[in-house]
Image (tube, rainbow, N blue to C red):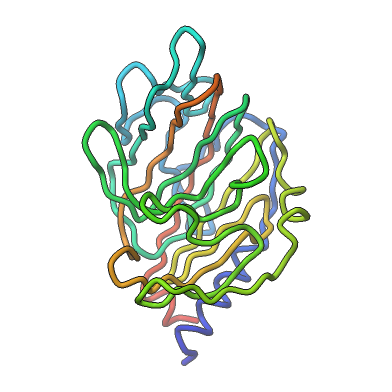
Length: 245
């Protein structure tokens, strides 16, 4: 039997080989795919999700939130998936950010009052600094794009650069559809955009590292913007999956 560390490496390599197509804006019809992924957004309405009323909507098969001059977003808030708090999983979704804004995908997080959420976030922005970075509500950048490594129990990082961040961001299509993938196994978290690894960290922080929690989508305050999400698919990774490798 292979060690857990070896299995995690195999999973990450395997999951990174992805065929991506953005030609069809319609959501997938199947609820569960042959590779074990389950659609957690039905493409029709917000069944299974909850967020600030009259802000989130479904439009053309996509979850949408928008900030306009007439109706600005004054504080960050989130649309949360209600049907579980996964621990080890592979999440993938398509997103499109239009305007000069910011958004993200929360995971292994906790709900807070006023539609707020606390925890990890796979970051997205119109600029080039934060997209592909792992953010945290109280820690800001846990690890930035192009880096990998570990954070010990005291919060001390030991990172190395595996790719040029400026080159990695070229795979991100600003204002267009992109695919985000989050792979979380044990304390190891890997983020990919359009099939390219953005960052990877083993987070062993004694008080802030989390190994389970909710999934949520962010609406961020700031200038006018529109964020859309579709094809939201989740595959839970169990102990049996690890032992079978």
